[in-house]
Image (cartoon, rainbow, N blue to C red; front, side, top):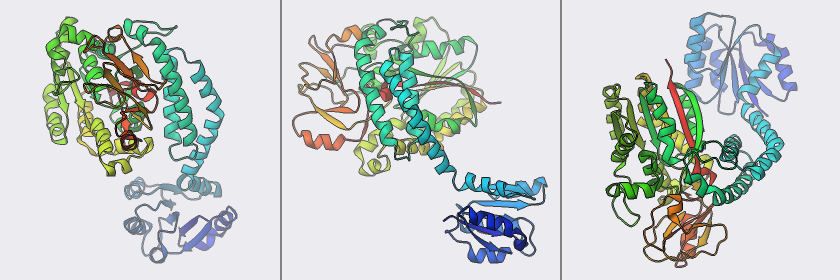
Length: 517
């Protein structure tokens, strides 16, 4: 039974309300003054109704002491006064609500539903809505034949994954996502060659598909052509559901102008996808046109050390004269320095920032037992992302950019997916280490769900050797070698990985935001 503490110096006049609430199933404890209220208030109460105008200890004084002792306890101020300074003071003390006398029983009941029952009401409504829409989503999955339709599927699944993250129905969403990823992987296997073959390829009735190598042409160049100063922010390893998680925080400083999703090229790995973004080229084209700027899989040096130079080649090819700044942020201290440098960059048309924090979070989760426990599923992973954004200098950076009038283009190079099922692969010792895709000679995997590209050049991928091929895991699978198979299957299970084929890795956010005045 929910417990209410009602504090009012005229408590005897409130008996009709108390009887009404008891009939609704609430237990109401009363106090006629602030001192008595403080003697009985404890963590067992669900909410406090507090009269503002009482003799002796005032309502505001009582409020301050209640919040000091029990900051999480919702307190509703009830008063005859409509004076603005009293409302502001009460709000400043973090009241849950503010009611003006005379109140009626329905107002009190609504207040209780809002502050005590809101989560369970919202959750139940979400469960009911999902039950009603489950069939429609299944139909969307079974009939999707264009990238636009797969975008819609990905958005729907992300929405329900967030709405039902604390619900027993999460398993239904997981099952439907698995079904969607299976169908999406088959669609990719059928259409990927034609999608990559032409930047304006219209696949089975689809419009232009934005892919990694034409992101800047589609999302950044048009803004520069309008004379806008742009902050192009690439957050490594950033999923669509993570974007939806931080969107409410960004809404304080920005309005969303356009929200799109684009398709990461394969492999969905930084070496390929992010270099494609900054060069405007497919990986094979980078290797052929700018061999000094391409790092091979087997090389030990950083695979993304030439991003700034690749941006310059892109601008040169399009005969664009914009000056630009480029920062890669791997640690908070450097982020603070970039914040101070932004003001000086306010007259530079194009400013590019790469944020590697989400990528580091993903890798640390794989390697650290504590981080595995903190992010043991998608909901916890989103929660960590939100906490990072709220408390890191990144939020200060984007707030400062808004103050300086930058149009923000927020995106990523690829997403990530939680892997669960190990599949056995045989490969030679020169094969790369990524567990979602392999490139090498004589790759051998009997699992029928993997996608193999035997002619890498057809999809713009370098071919380390004449007989090299690429092999991609789909859905929630990951590769493991026969040697110590069980150990690695257990070690990587339920970690977040990228490089393969899934909605989460390939259909990723591309958002343009306008600073609020």
